[in-house]
Length: 331
Image (spheres, rainbow, N blue to C red):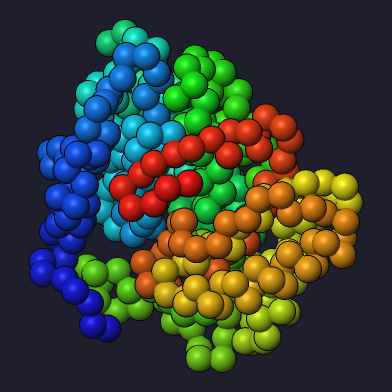
């Protein structure tokens, strides 16, 4: 597998340096902690929002630092949770009088690092709370986690709490909003290929040219089943059936629909999936109020996609509509 890599051990630091150099007026890079933070942070008039997770899922999370989104991100190595001290030092650097909110995708290593960092930060008098995101419906337990995984639906939690924080909401209110959004968000993905971590240099798992992994995790974890490749419509329908039936979503609901690329899928193919999902939701009497198509939470170069639905109400829709600015994109 050919990649643009120098030293695999420097893959993440070199990426972070590049992000910072490309956005000198917006972002600050603290290499000691793999920290990308807002250049104007911490802001004493708002809660600081931090997320970490492993690298390899970009644009999550280091590329979603900016106004109305994250205040900082401190990732670990590729597919590895950040060390506890990265989270702890980031929390101290980003401490605001209004508090700090730690967003954590539900993986065992991430939970351990963030919970320990929260305890140590709280012991120093920092007002800090943690919110766990677990939107994946594919499996209950997997290689990296106990309970459901946090995947592309984390975008909607970031967006909602980020907007509320910019508007001056306190820490308890952000917890309420984040838990509310997580509770009405469901995701499932399909992989067409494996992915290749730079340090490994070969595919993370083996999958045949005529096979798909239904319900794959964003680290390549097994899903519900290995199946034969079929049509785009049939794959979309399987994702939609799993997601719609889990909450469940019902006729009359208004939803946000996201088709998220896993890193190696052309945008044209994502729109094919979106078109089918939109039509099928309309046939079920479910109204698509907001649409998201593109790469939001990837798995390096994996070919595949995930489908996310968020049940909207006036509050959630208002927060998703609020302006946000990050390094390379505007929402």
